[in-house]
Image (cartoon, rainbow, N blue to C red):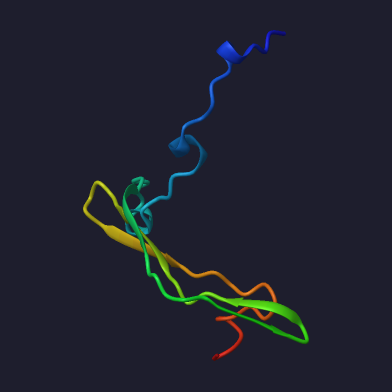
Length: 93
């Protein structure tokens, strides 16, 4: 068995993970989404200690924009959760 570095090929990003267009998928097609752009808000992070430990409340949102070959657009928006209290999901702070 040969396992030299020259024979190994790393998979491309699309071979590892490529999201499908959910609108096309509902119609029976499997069109892959093409990455368009990514943006992030720039707001101050609120960190504080309490009896539970160090809280990390980050209000910033990361938005990732995709488009499929049929013209459907999708925006995935993500926020970081506080490892102590699960903010913003569990609290209204």
